[in-house]
Image 1 (cartoon, rainbow, N blue to C red):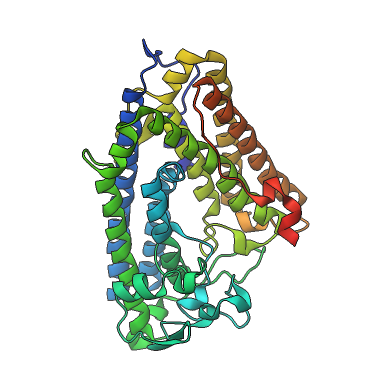
Image 2: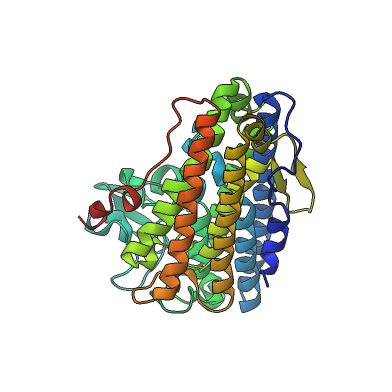
Amino acid sequence: MKPTLLAAAAASLVVAGAAPALAMPDARPVLTTYADIAHAGYADSLAAARTLDGAIDALVADPSDETLAAARAAWVAARVPYQQTEVFRFGNPIVDAWEGRVNAWPLDEGLIDYVSDGTGGTGGGDNAAATANVIANPSLTLGGETVDAGTIDTALLMETLHEAGGIEANVATGYHAIEFLLWGQDLNGTGPGAGTRPATDFDPANCTSGHCDRRVAYLTTASDLLIEDLTEMVDAWAPGGEARAFVLDDPQRGLKAMLTGMGSLSYGELAGERMKLGLMLHDPEEEHDCFSDNTHYSHFFNAKGIENVYAGRYHRIDGTVVTGPALADLVQATDADAHAALTLRLAETLDQMATLVESAQTGEAYDQMIGAGNAAGNARVQAAIDALTAQTRAIETVVSSLGLDGVGFEGSDSLDAPEKVFQ
């Protein structure tokens, strides 16, 4: 039986030949649907972030196992719409310039809070900020300069800490900073279990780990910033918004952006950086939602976002559906064989992703699947990577069928030059 959370997603799968082909291969209606889905996806992400913010407020008002669990559940729910929007990256420079503020990973969590001795850094000795622990230290030295961190506010997080020193692992904002604060480190390696931060880490009256008032300030500030950032992207895709205009004002540019996003997320980002790299290294630090063990869902909904764009159909969190003329219609009218092939590959990818979700729900989390010596788990992850790679080849065929020049997809050393991974 498929997991309950997958039911709505599975219901929206495009069926080859089910939608009527456009009378003429006009890209403008297709791009309008694309922009409408982007706007709805970011609006849903904003609504879910506001629900998360309310759960965080309840946690800090009354720290308990129950309020912490509710905040964690709200974070997991917030990932469902957001991960489906990542297909709008890569081809849309407005989104790419913004994305690092909300979903950057992996992070040197020691920049933010306490970590277990000898753990927590991805930048190693090259990143002095990896052990800055701003929550414990109201005065920091970053880049040889003293920083006043006495007040934890948006300016400190965004202007001083985020990507401090030009190092991408210095992630101070977004979903993963909030995830780390809600769960703490996952110190189980490739064994079972996620992070186990206690609710008392947010209780100044019964504080564990020290500096609970500053931890509360950091968490609430990061949550506020997430809402601000998502509001910006909702506005960008609304009628008259800059991101919408970018794709609608030039149909060729819009189609290229659409297909670049689909292919780059499918191949270099998801198949490569988020999956193959961690599998090659058997390293849970390369797991996308590594503190919460939510990676299986993040991967599934990334893949679902690609299918949404092709099908021209998005199921909103309120149960309504955004739909309209689709890229699938355009491709079917241009090259029916390419349409059938891509439709099949998209469905195969979602099937493989659903297998990862089922595995996690029945007791083997994604970080366990990529562990050394877990042949069956490794094989499940590799099957999903293979499906994404085949899907990407089908997207390339669509690009060719539509006669689009200058479309290139993001790559990954883990796929294209694996020998470099170990250098």
